[in-house]
Length: 501
Ligand SMILES: CC(=O)N[C@H]1[C@@H](OP(=O)(O)OP(=O)(O)OC[C@H]2O[C@@H](n3ccc(=O)[nH]c3=O)[C@H](O)[C@@H]2O)O[C@H](CO)[C@@H](O)[C@@H]1O[C@H](C)C(=O)N[C@@H](C)C(=O)N[C@H](CCC(=O)O)C(=O)O
Ligand SMILES: Nc1ncnc2c1ncn2[C@@H]1O[C@H](COP(=O)(O)OP(=O)(O)OP(=O)(O)O)[C@@H](O)[C@H]1O
Ligand SMILES: N[C@H](CCC[C@H](N)C(=O)O)C(=O)O
Ligand SMILES: [Mg+2]
Image (cartoon, rainbow, N blue to C red):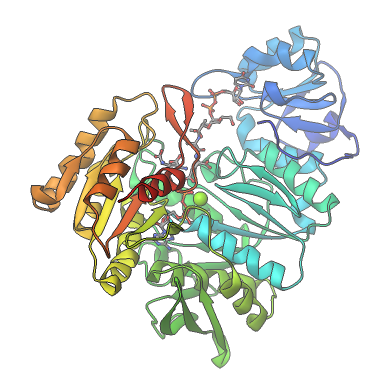
């Protein structure tokens, strides 16, 4: 992955030391490494190249390339051993190299997470939003911060656009080590279920870990919903010193133990943290957070919807768990100016309100449309929803997404998201089948092409209406057959609204 920050200096680390640390056997001699990558295209001189067996290829195919770019050693499984030796490189052989990669990368980069306050956030929806709120609280406390997640990776003032939500362990440990060298003291990161299964966060000890909620997603990757749940549960397998769970979500609460901290946006008094006195403020809301020992914190969130109260409450609980002063944390969260592409208003003057949101799973669509319903009611208008589903991703969630949209909005326009390698008409039909089960056909339309669908929503809108374009949020491209074409819902919706008579 290019663009990932690396530490400027790394003390050389001997392979023999790694062989003693890991369940891995050394062959072909010893070497000193000063970095590690899993991607042949990102090799730097002095690197250990982790040649991993994958779903598509074996990284061993690229050992010669890696050597030409300056890799001085290889970590691989028995199948990759000979290719490494043939390239003249010493090789560490592990039965499951992914399972040891986190520990290896942490060792090579000097175990950076031990010197940082690490906060991890998992859950089906709300990880990015909660992470931004946590980061705002850490900054309010005067800390130099890092943030790793879907939208971007930030260490101090260095900002890199993210390729995935949770980077591979190699990149992650490099980011943390680079952060330390730039004065970062606390890092908040999204920990995706893919990451937990693939060991991307191995080697990290979290001061606190939070769980937003559990719904349906990623069943293209996790064989069953139970395995998806088990993947997320790994953040709470002892690697998080304080565990913070959503009291309002019974699935999440299956992980509750004696010392677990809980939060309830619904205001349940049995939770460690609960919200009360929620009142609207501009495009957001203020509320009181009641914590342990009678603690009351005035806070808020610059976004609408009960789900954003939940995100803010979780952020507060995590911040207090790692020692931030509650009042400072509450102020920092309330002052955070929103999250890119999450209920983001499209600022075009006029009598129709355009909002772009990243809801691309059923529980997120329910939450986003509930928040926007309140706004539409206040304006005396209808709620029009433009929605599609991503190709080459969980097929089972498509009808559920259609149903959630049809139940939550007055008019639904079903269109394309990222088709990837799929026929967009087939993806639309799956979304539509769910929508038609849930609502009368008269409120459902299907428009091929996302731009055309956004134009159609604007054409249908009358004064007071709210148009919600869901699913792509801050994404700036649309992936079609391996090509990413420029496309930004915020720009498209603004252009369509500006052209409104
Ligand atoms: C399902 C999944 O996560 N797969 C990841 C996995 O792929 P893989 O094991 O199948 O790898 P592969 O393509 O067979 O290649 C094997 C090895 O050869 C290496 N290689 C390959 C080609 C080459 O030229 N040079 C090279 O070194 C690869 O780096 C890899 O280590 O390891 C690859 C290397 O890191 C990742 O790129 C790939 O992410 C794919 C692209 C992906 O789309 N992942 C998504 C689904 C993902 O991780 N999403 C989560 C959750 C999102 C969210 O809900 O927020 C995320 O954290 O982003
Ligand atoms: N706590 C929540 N409960 C339910 N839905 C939420 C919650 N927070 C956010 N959402 C919805 O989910 C969408 C994605 O939010 P966010 O990006 O914060 O989640 P995420 O877990 O990081 O998602 P992803 O895994 O896709 O990166 C939002 O745009 C909103 O529609
Ligand atoms: N991180 C998410 C992004 C999905 C965004 C949505 N626009 C889609 O294409 O499905 C995933 O990989 O599932
Ligand atoms: Mg995210």
